[in-house]
Length: 136
Image 1 (tube, rainbow, N blue to C red):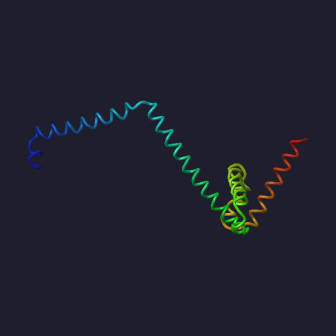
Image 2: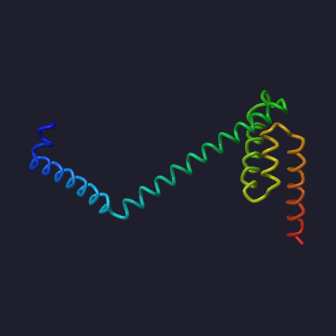
Image 3: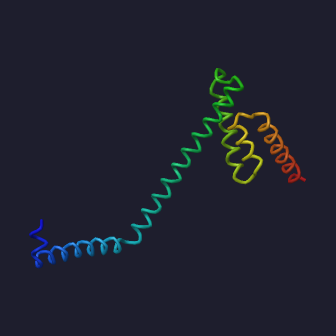
């Protein structure tokens, strides 16, 4: 290897080849069509959303199982468990816009169903009042 470094012509040639490879690689990357870059970005965003959705479904499933177990609903068939799952999923959706629902879910995660139930009832009452008001 020392003989390459001692031979200045060969050393310069290898440096030039390395620089050329770097230049060509950078040129190809920069020349990549915008559509292809946009498509890659869309795929990355979609993959991230799918991962978040899977995590969300998993969290909802865990909470629904916990609630079903506390209610003793494990042996009562899939109907009740599905209703619990849908209720928790709906609460999670509402938590994005209502702090009470977010807090209620935190109480559920902590196993404090009484405090969660109080917030769920308050939320439901407000929604009922809003529907009744809209009807008038």
